[in-house]
Image (cartoon, rainbow over all chains, first blue to last red):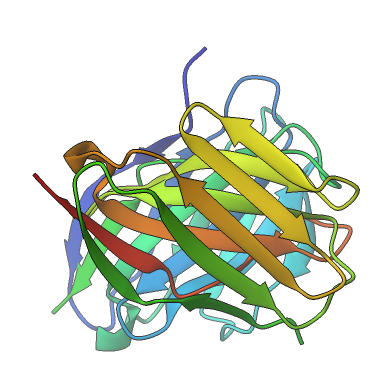
Length: 113
Length: 112
């Protein structure tokens, strides 16, 4: 069974631009969560989608948004990029919510210059 | 608000040693706790998941325990190997959704 895949793996953008990251969960998984990892703040939760509905949202500005499609694939978008948005963005999938194990993808490394 | 702390932040041990990594959390009303491993620049690999009703889980040389009432978990690694060198993260889920709260991690170096 294929794992969680994320595209692209690396991305370089300029301040003010916008970016879209993609995540394909493990087949059969319906929950997708996004996290931002930086050296200073560690791993921080961005948002979670289940059956195309956002269930939880972390404490990030409105420039960060996401969506989930009917096939459970998810995208996150960051508009008006800032230098501080440079980070590793990780996606996790789970069969459902509650007590199911979560599996992470390899991440997308975003560099904002 | 849930806070997760991992001690120590870094650890260096000689190959073959048994070691314990610690994780503590402030709110004991959790659904589960998960231990992950992260290699530099990579994603997270799930090691063990302990449900709130369980006391421990084992996988190979790894054993994780959970004491919900005291807000603590430990990850025991037996007979450490250089390939175990990585950052180990614990995360708790304390809500009905899938939001995980992570600790800062313990960076482990196992020297040959």
